[in-house]
Amino acid sequence: MRRIAVFCGSANGASLEYKDGAVLLGKALAEQGIGIVYGGSSAGLMGAVADTVLQEGGEAIGVIPTLLKEREIAHTGLTELHIVDSMHERKAKMAELADAFIVLPGGAGTMEEFFEVFTWAQIGLHQKPIGLLNVAHYFDPLVFFINHMTSEHFLQEQYRLMLLVGASAGELLKAFHTYEPPAVKTYDRKTKV
Image (tube, rainbow, N blue to C red):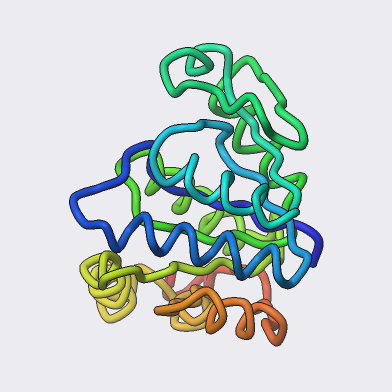
């Protein structure tokens, strides 16, 4: 695994634990020689994880759309910074450069990035592991909701199981190394499930 895409907020959040989690993730990745590809900002958790990876001698590649270059304050000290035309290009470039995805706490943009790669995995556009780094139980409500989707038969159990959830970076990275993707989603013509 050469690089992991990290989706996270351009804010620090209400708890210091969120930034601590981003820093610990950056250290764990650099220790294992794994670079990051992320949204390219110097602000919030995005900046914290990138700064840590760089301080630890690792690779940090940013991808930021022109629209957000000034608003999110593009990081100027990265290994590489790709400036793209749209949010769609940003996500596609991040996915292309990454071997896996880790989601840290964040807002609507972070959730949108997560759900897109989660959907892509279900339909077979990639077979890369996806993990929620559940810092300070931030993702507990989301995990509850995803389990609810499964129990209500809107998400098949095999696709629920492809979402990895861990309280620490080490736990997620260990799960990534043994990850086996499920078969591509198909539909039963009789039941439409």
